[in-house]
Image (cartoon, rainbow, N blue to C red):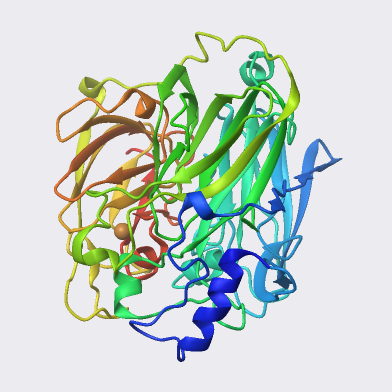
Length: 495
Ligand SMILES: [Cu+2]
């Protein structure tokens, strides 16, 4: 039995029923130093589509399941084609793909293609509901640069709980550039999907999910890390250089990732594809919904831990952190084999990255994100954009097809909000007037906006117009999204 497991059981005996102000801890404040990593990192299977009528067809079943995260434990979960999370969907730019998504849950769900540029009716937002026992058959052409994207539930008012229980998976887009770059690209060998989440558990090992005011306001933050659905994971590597495709799949927590020995690594891609060139980092901030691809080098017999170090100023400090320490916690242990196959040099240049000149923008929209500090209420409209909570029957913004626009994202609340815009990839123009860091100078679909920060992003709304079906824009802290911090925009053909 692991240290954390024993600590958990000891704690369980001393703690009453879960509820507001009382939460259970699997780790009892243990830090990276005394953590054990006993479970081999799981690699989600790649979903091989079937070629039919010049389309690649993918079958997904949304289902309930039971997952064992600890020895002998049973946690009720949800997954795609499995009990927790889903397979990695892989398609190449230019391919026509279609899905048969069957809902075997006991409740409605949707499947949103986060980061994919698709028609609004194919987007899988709250309007594309899949009733119990129904099958949704979206179809679209993949037409965007190679990127690590993902898919997840976007069920109205139920996104947080469904994603928390496991409804998320990765979606890789490949293109000619990604296939010819000399970077690690062997799936599960030197190119690893890394879906990071945090969860809390009840004494009976079910997920602890709280509707308390605190957890709805801060978002549901757990004390146990999962990587690809594995607790205390360990990865043994046989190559000198590895690529991590990191997805922050958390409901609410922004991660500050670094290696335990502070080694340098290189970010090569943002949400929407490759950066222009690799960017040296020792720490990576990745907010819920964001992705980052990084390269890191190992030496034979290396033993290093990927850690999360919560930061002051990340909105989790002071009275907001409910007694959590700011100490590092291990996320994933990485061990090098005693011999490592040598990798090729990292290319100096990765890709051209699309950009738009601010002078070409025909419109600037200002979106102000606020949250009430009083009693939280789903219906009370405490999470707002421009003073309004989501109304699923209201269109908040109407964009003209092919227009280049600047969206000014203003955070007037005490905690950071990762803002996600459907349909498009954007570039960050500036943060409070300053050029964003180099590793944010790529295509993005989600951007963290700090308290008192204004982030300007620029994009173009192309290809898909629809007079009736809107796309969503929202905070990717899923409790905030479900709580109303979401709006709808139409893309319409010009007069
Ligand atoms: Cu938020």
